[in-house]
Length: 127
Image 1 (cartoon, rainbow, N blue to C red):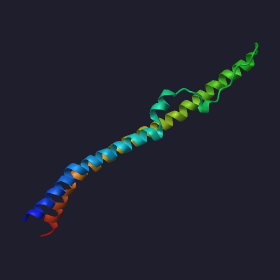
Image 2: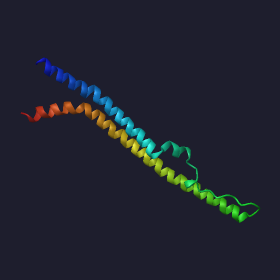
Image 3: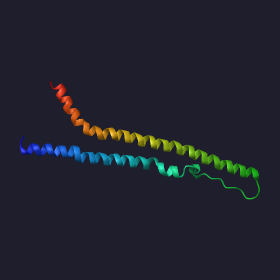
Image 4: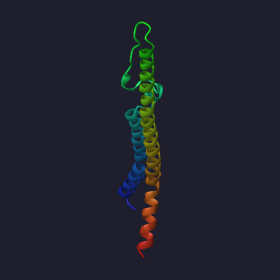
């Protein structure tokens, strides 16, 4: 084997097993961070019981019990609807986060297994 071909083989091995795994991990991390920001999981958890779209009714002046009850229940309904909507968004964000973790795991470790699999298949079917 000549010096040039050893150099090319060494460059390939360095690229495949050193440079590219770092790039795959960096891309995987970027996907995970993008998903957290896209679904705003942590801000949704912080504001879980906030009113939906900040719709709030203000209590009237004076002693008007039916208006107080109407305002109270309207604010409660707005907070419950906000919590329901935030629950679905948080669950969707967690689902996609787990999906990205699983897919990234298979891509990362598949990157290392692929050359051995390729050599195995070439040896098996080249007979």
